[in-house]
Length: 255
Image 1 (tube, helix red, strand yellow):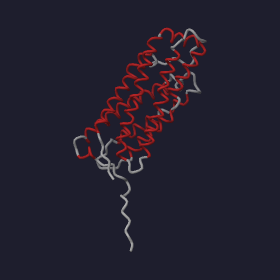
Image 2: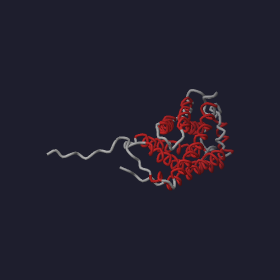
Image 3: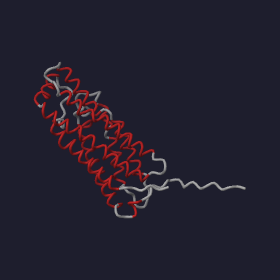
Image 4: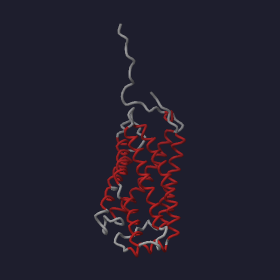
């Protein structure tokens, strides 16, 4: 049983997804000002001041971010399509990747929407309400680490499970997936800390995971394009996704 691999859509999805990453982090996140998070210890008046003074830039930044987040899903599906080649007839790890990509996209797409909500009428409502909305957005951005960890962990597992003579992905990319997954865990500790390294603007809960995630995206984009380049124009571009187990043999008739 074989299945033809079409590399064109995969290549397109990678570039579109990478452009979405740039739109998300390179423009929207920076423009909104949330690349430098407010402190969880800030008073309601301080939080409202941020949204009042930077209302327009936050709105525009959130618009760009929510657009970029949707494109990122294509990038994740391209990665799943390539790692699918490393599985047999029962692609549980590929299905897990796709499910986690969907869950992460749905969760994170709400973040810029909630920031935009806080910027909708910040000086017209109770300041405590605006601060609560802001709290909710930052929790949604960092706290749901399990789907991301599972996505990265399963991807690394699939890459490191490739024992072929000419693996599609280098082994270091599998370990990079695992390290990125591990460093997403401190985001779940922000409910215990309003200051320090485990707060939502801390080194371990925010800055380190964000930096490592950026390295992971760049690294995986590089190895994905390299893999497509090796496969393209060769017999491997029509490579078969062959089952790990042997093909079933037709039953012999017993007279």
